[in-house]
Length: 83
Ligand SMILES: [Zn+2]
Image (tube, rainbow, N blue to C red):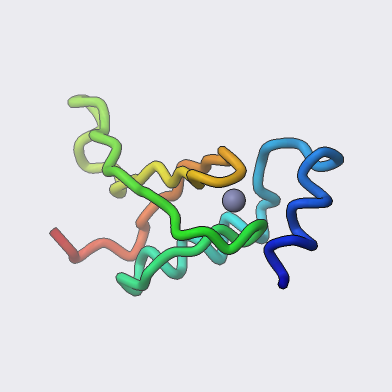
């Protein structure tokens, strides 16, 4: 399984996503898709991050967390329009 392969890499890789992986995560979130961890393919949890009051006009942001490998990433929803 791909998951087993990915798991072997976990020890070597920093607990972070590459910019490319974040980009893919952001696109999936913007499309309202079910988001999977690009590293271990686990279903990711996500929660909205409230912008600081002074930056309320700023694009929305969500925090994605993988329950398996514990990586996380803040993703900007620059597409906007959804509420
Ligand atoms: Zn993961």
